[in-house]
Structure formats: structure tokens, C-alpha cells
Length: 396
Image (cartoon, rainbow, N blue to C red; front, side, top):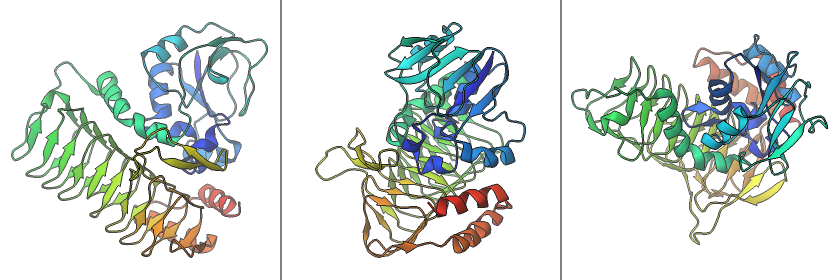
């Protein structure tokens, strides 16, 4: 049966990352959330239900996708927020027609011929089955599940029984059976790949420069560059076409994002086209060792992240100047340009410009001009659908 991957009304808990993409395109592990669901359940094709304002952007990027228009017949609807494990996979595969799997009052999956739309309520014709299967509730949960999901993806998708990394001259390897290196990867002398605590996957065309240390579990995406002397401590997922240097721990880079210079980034999520200036640092642990509170767009207030380790969340096309300091649990919206000597705390709204104590509006025309220049540096254009979406978001 056809798979339908759906976002629900919790999509705002994943802002600012999902201001510009469906929850299914949030990265966790080696894959995006939807890619894992497609691998597990999408053998007969997939369609997608998402926030309607994203339709035009996705039609432009994926003209062959079925969006917010499921086909006729019995379909398996699966929530894009699914926390994948053996129990969840088994429970979903055992669903019968007109049955729904619930996590509390939240819908995990439904098998039905009823056509459902974004924000649907459970049809009365469907039998609810309460389970212990879980859904991600917000981005800090995604960040902290990232090490587990890198390992899960490696063991279930990338690992082969005869997997063994043949050491290249000058490259130092611990546990070569847990390392997967794609073709056309460049590893410079004195690179250390330490897979003793988790797997390392380095994808096609990636480049790791000299004297870098990479500890697993870590994923380095296609065409990404790890700069000279970088220290990657594990629990890190780096999407395609990123440049990463300095110290990084427990963090996710969506794609096309740069943290090239020295400075610490810990337990954070960075969207696309983010640039961190030299010696930008974030805190990911409070001096009190208490749980970190993080701004949540759905409740328009701070919430307990459930962990004492939480860095920052930065939306697409946001930039920091040199020596910028980011406090524990900071959320920065999309299209921001922040700099200066102060400490950025709590929440920086989208399209903000300036220092910590004197933020002003980053006007849409100026933002759009910079975003166009940035994308052209990667031989890409700022599309009409992107400009329309950003203009709408700049007015909210």
C-alpha cells in the first residue's frame, strides 16, 4: 500500500527549522526523518501531507511528489515525528485496515482508505490502539536522539558483514569495522577516525583535512569539508555541502551551513545557509547543571528541554559575526544577522539585525539580496517560491 508521511499540528514545536521545510525533512541520524520512513514503509511509493504554506516550495523542488493529495485506496499514514525503533516498526507493520496507532492522544500511524488532510482529526470509522510508541515532541529531543539514530542507520542501512575500512597512509583508525567511507572521499595525513564508541560514515565527495579528529557516532554528508585540526566529538550529523571546523559535539547541520573557524558548538541544531563567524561560541550547559529551558513557537513561551545539555537552534540564512557568544538554549529564527560583544540569550525573532541589547529589523529586501548572493556562491538561485515564503515570514 502507498505510504503517506504526514506533519501534524505539532510542526510549530520544530520552528524555526520547520518554518522553511516539513518536519519530515528534519535531519536526525544519517537520514532525514522522512527518508527513514520511506526506507521502512515506502516500497510502493510515498506521498506527503504538510503545512499548506509550504506546498509551492515543495512543488518547485519536487515536481513529481504527491503533496496534500493522497491517492485513492488503502494507505498507510505515518507521522513524520516517529521515533524509530524495533517496537515502533513492528507495531506499525501490524496495523490492520481502519486501525490507528496512538501515542497518548497523538496519532502515530493510520491504515485507512479515508483521505486525510493536514490537521486532521481521527476518523470515527477508525479503531484507536493506544501504544507505548513515541513521537518527537520538539527539536531538543531530536538533537539528543541523534547519536542513537546515527548508530541505527549504520547498523540497518549502511553496515555490511564484510564492512572493513582499509586504512589509508597516514590515517589513524580505531575500530575499522564500524567505519563506512564512500567513493571519492579525501582523507589527509594525520586524520584520526575513532569509531570505538560509535560508527563513522563519510559520504561521497567529502573532504577531511589534516590533523582532524572524528569520534563516532558521526555522519559527514556529501561534499562537506572538515577543516584542518577540527575536533568532532561524536553525536554529530553534518548534511551535504557544509564546512566545519573548531570543536563540535552532539550537533546537527541541516545542509549548506558553515562553521569553518575555531569556537565551540555543542548540542545544537543549525538549519541551511547558516554561517557562524570566527570564534563564535555557544554554551550547552548551565553552571547550575539544571535542565535548559528553550523557547517553543507552538506555546509561544519557554519549555523544559528535558536535558541539562542543550545549545542553540538556528534557522535558515542566519549569521553570526566574529566572537559572538550564544547562551544555553538560545533559539535564533530565520534570516538573522547578529554580532557584537554582548551575550545573546533566550530568543532572537526571525529577521533580526544587530547586537544583543539593540536588535532591529532585518528588512526583507536587504535579506533577499544577501541570500541571493550566498546561494550564487554555490551555483544556486534563490527561487521564486523561496522569495515568496521568506517575504510572507518577514511580515509575521
